[in-house]
Length: 273
Image (cartoon, rainbow, N blue to C red; front, side, top):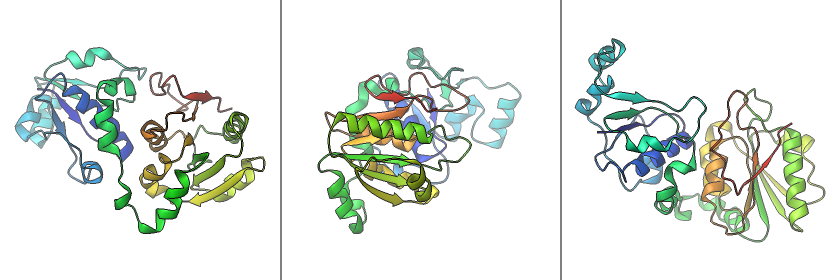
């Protein structure tokens, strides 16, 4: 039996569930090891999963205190697999048995075969969104709208510089006329001081950093997107079903690691320096 661990932020959990859902095509008995607190099933009502029992987790040294002690002593019977050191896609993982998968699995190549099912699972119906957002939702879906996420731009792990955003905006402006930019940001003043929209229409929407996940439903409804190096941005771009969408992503996703299979080849990557 294979087991996939669910942990981290909602956007990280989406990748882990997507990996699990793809794994089910190879192992119908696969299980999920889910946290005791809320996880994304409450947010998305995922269509199919089986939660691992305490007995399922024992061979991997997971679950109970006793099982974890046995795992630390090297007496577990099952294999524990984490992400590849270079974070690349590893197709061979789907051939494993009796394995506990403890990683992020940040590549859409893992779930390419179940893409349509996942798009339905991760869609956020408008009826569950606040009625106060109706006007914004309608505007995002019309015309040449471009959603931009700017998340904590001065933080140490942010790779998206002012140059990145300005090059991205210039790319959009050179592609089509009269775009309407919607900037979702934790730092309104930084956006005003650092991004030149060259006279284009701009709406700036502030959000607290701890509510980032709620942006997903809005970001993916725009016609195009300029991403931050945030997984919420990534999922918004991936879920966007506009056939002629432009997705602009940072060439450097993280300062201390490369993710060679994270960004699809049909998205535009722009330098961050």
